[in-house]
Amino acid sequence: MTDHERPLADRGRMDAAEAGRRLADTGVPIDQALCSTSARTRETWKLAVQEFPHRPKTVYEERIYDASPGELIAVLNETPDDLRNVLVIGHNPGMEALTEILAGSAEDEVRERINRRGFPTAAFAVLTFTGSWKDVEPGRAALVDYWAPTD
Image (cartoon, rainbow, N blue to C red; front, side, top):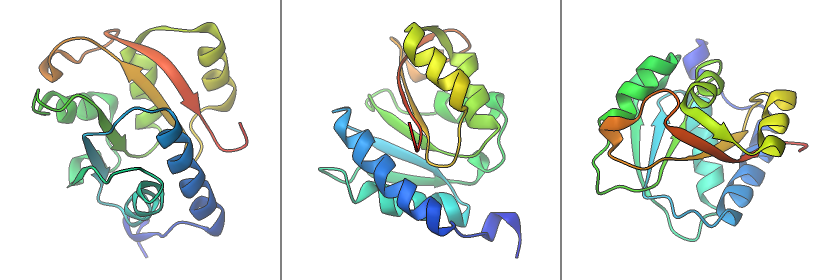
């Protein structure tokens, strides 16, 4: 079995559902999910989205699998501006690096937690920025929330 086709482990299934609950609790209404095409990200999203009050449109994007931060920014730059809140379901090390690169500012407590925990399976970060998706670039966002399993 290739890495792309590897399923979630039992722990990942539990963490995915909890991540969905925690993400729904942030109150951020997700307009669209951009999900890697790997088996485990698709499974993570399927379990997490069940916890949402409404199911956002989902786009399965091959370029997210094993993507660098620059590749992830390129995907985000293509997002239509009528979408305000977008969730990216991807892989490390790209997702953690993307968060670090985009977050020009962060609350000390949030930054400390992310530095301590990193991005284990099912972790998420919430970043905000003002402007067009075409303007997403390093340092333009603020890291406002973060959660990881056992946090």
